[in-house]
Length: 205
Image 1: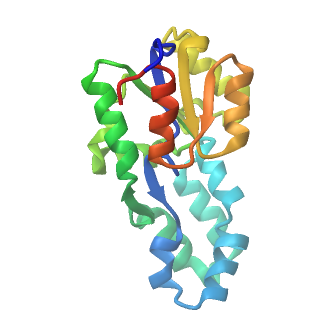
Image 2: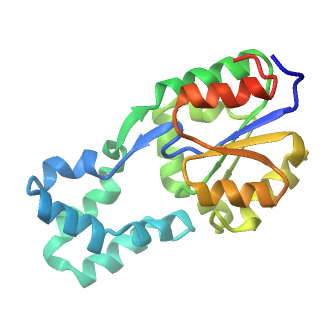
């Protein structure tokens, strides 16, 4: 193991720690593949969902979209009321890494594009999310990755040295943005690869 070059480890959440996909909910609600794809692509689109990650209240989002597509009111409402069913569970390999880091006394942080309302739901359902040394959630801060501001909030709020802070995210654009702030960052591929990245930096996982 090399000399330790990292003091703090920061995790994106969706696609890194939580296995999240609207398909988990809508495969039952909309069995037809084409109809489901159209709904999730063009109505409850990723861009629409991202507005909640940026801080728009869910009640407002649902009301506005339902007014535009009243024929899909039930399906639209389910995106809010059935949100937890979109979480397939923890990505266990990552959860194991986080647990091992914490057991070694290494601080772990969350830096995530996430609705404030749903973040609280997720923390209640998955206690590992409540165990971070700190968290920066886009919906609370009302600014999104890969914008620089969210990274700066993390570094400033918790007084982290960017050069000794490791960050992982499944979206390469977010990793590039983290590196631009001086953070050590790698794209998340899977848990074994994450372990390799951390071991190279001298962390005992």
